[in-house]
Length: 247
Image (cartoon, rainbow, N blue to C red; front, side, top):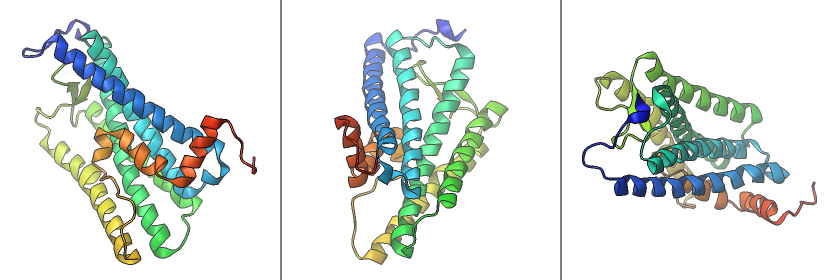
């Protein structure tokens, strides 16, 4: 049924191809940068800390968003959705879960930074692992609700990818989901960095608001990974094939 979908009224093949190319560039860039971040953890033992575990979780979440965009890019270049209605539901679930995990991971990183710099105590492994598990289980829970009938996944206007259907009468789900998965993480992020600024008396590197994580996963890779000296050295080790003395 979905395999024979035609382009919606008002959209030409050129517009769909343009969207596909933009999504393709964003997907490949996000996958490349976040893959380097993930590889740096495997390469540099100094990065294997509880705080960096949160960054690793964020990199996996943003890789999931980029993978979701890659599927949408492929469909846009084909000018149709070739994966059927079940594929649409799976695509919507995967993209929504990754986006929610990215937002929550950003809030977890903000809280972790506050805990480290304002309490002068290192983040414990059990705390970091618990945070990561909570983020992913919570994201999967909220993303699964539309599959169970509270909310709905459907084709986006171009008909080449799937996401939450905001036109249906699921106001209770949308407002509840937005509070727990957008407003609350954003509040935690802003409050954590504000408290850090008050405590330290200065502003560090500019931080990306949590909501941007849903739209541009590549920003997280630059902000949290490439902007970190330790992660940058780990990435450089991956690219230069040099091994650290501790290896």
